[in-house]
Length: 174
Ligand code: SF4
Image 1 (cartoon, rainbow, N blue to C red):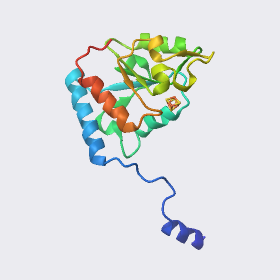
Image 2 (cartoon, rainbow, N blue to C red; image 1 turned 135 degrees about the vertical axis):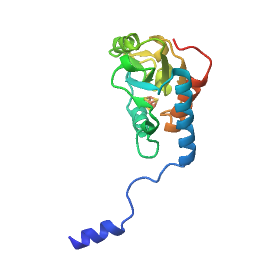
Image 3 (cartoon, rainbow, N blue to C red; image 1 turned 120 degrees about the vertical axis):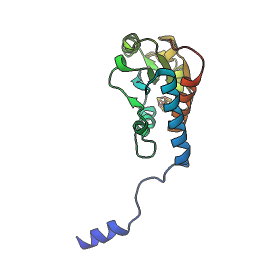
Image 4 (cartoon, rainbow, N blue to C red; image 1 turned 60 degrees about the vertical axis):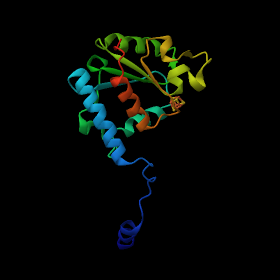
């Protein structure tokens, strides 16, 4: 037991090093996003993530937004459990035939005005899975898209920058 204790005390962490992103940059980005959403909506931004057929790597990057480095919720920005409470539908993955109806139903359930963000190459145009018999295509083939965030998968800072761009641009949500 003592040997195990000593090893655990002196052994460096086995996790990957923190990504080369300055915490100050992340803070400033999240703060600007929160200020912009309060100015635009009068409150914090509520995001509903919809997986329309992804490989789940895009979801891992979204999950990272809630880890201690990014900690999105400390500024009030939150992921909500239902599209009925959402300002933004953050859609990942190429739209599969079996998810087409669910994506459409989520969009119809979200209150107006609402934004749709297609996150990752798959959501933009089908990506790796375009042309498959099981795939309808990009998100735009089912519902209107307001912003695309390219990448496979996009980094958490890219997602934050995309949301900031969405909320500060002049276009009216659909
Ligand atoms: S864009 Fe890349 S990471 Fe995201 S769902 Fe498609 S294959 Fe996976």
